[in-house]
Length: 117
Image (cartoon, rainbow, N blue to C red):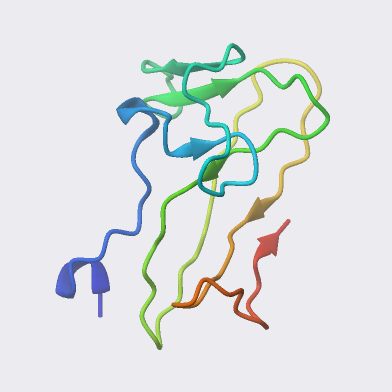
């Protein structure tokens, strides 16, 4: 059963083209710095591979991009988090995909895989 259709849940974060105020360049918690107005980031609306992309020039050893919104996941359901990354120039970066699983009290849910290769 598709919960996005039957229950009207929204699983996708907003497109980068809608603004970068919900995309954190730090830990993703409320009040953390966002990519909005960052000098090393630019929206590329005509990217041939992504039909619109966020291009980040990596200046630090670790560069974070985290959606600051919440995604509701109902009991008995799962959420698969994926990302597409394109290296434009330079050395290929290592990439880690992660999500934070919280319960209704904003406590971390133990035993849930939250990072991947």
